[in-house]
Image (cartoon, rainbow over all chains, first blue to last red; front, side):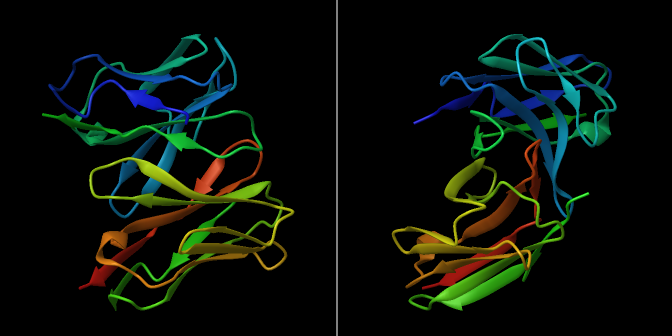
Length: 112
Length: 110
């Protein structure tokens, strides 16, 4: 089975810190995605990537950036963390556009 | 933009009951539809993936159907168990990305 690993289950960061969320998949998937999930708002797409060094903005990219230097790793960066970025962050990957998603276990980020 | 709706938002049933969760979407031009389960504080676990050319998929006590022309999918859970308590989300794939519903929170009462 494909495994998508998010490096941290829980993180607590201070306002203004630069935060890195890491995601690694082990099945050579082309596509990788970052979502955030908030009560009442569901999953919202932040950024996605179809290939190494490629990135596309999702619905809510403001305040975030991403990096994909290797095919298996997709990093989400909060340049200057703010309290409204407190959320559950979910990484997903898929083989190609016509295949299903596999999700990581999520990172619960709290910004204080 | 694709919009995905799941009704009801919450459902409570006694153990052993059969139940149906609903998902509707506004644009029928989809490649596939995926049902997920999410336990509190956890990531999403894939349950079933239905390609646009398929009418249904089955896995154990779960059966998912797809009517692309009417923009609807259902997830049927047979003989529900307390361990089925979770939030169930559907997602439709437009080719570029998946669009998610906000989920149905299911509680199965022993």
